[in-house]
Length: 132
Picture 1 (cartoon, one colour):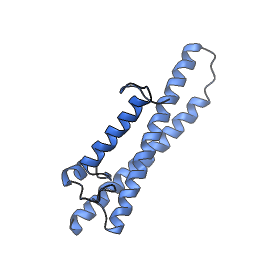
Picture 2: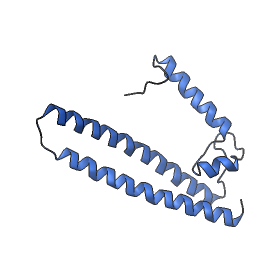
Picture 3: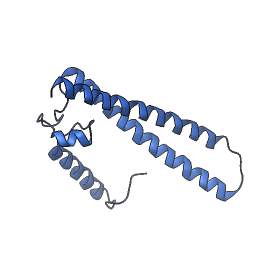
Picture 4: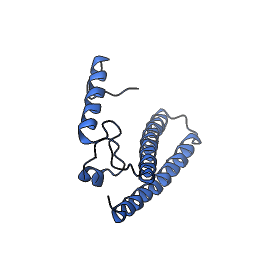
């Protein structure tokens, strides 16, 4: 990766980082507003519970991606950006263009997802079910 590509990647990751921080802050404020609503109506309580769960899931996803972006920025600083953390091979440029915070090459990513799915099925969960 040349200096121009490195700087473009750093800029893209930094923009995504800022966007996520704003999203996390908006979700936190929205969750606080939901907690302060007073109602005894069961329908309203169910809706509020659903919104809280949705915000929590968005929050967790945003934090996971934020962590990945920070790791990618650190890898750029170390000169290791684009290297698979599992096998050490270069991550395909098209993959990095699509997911600039990717830490695994496509082969290792597929293996990880297959292992995760296998563990869920072994635990008695269908592929479409999630952990609670």
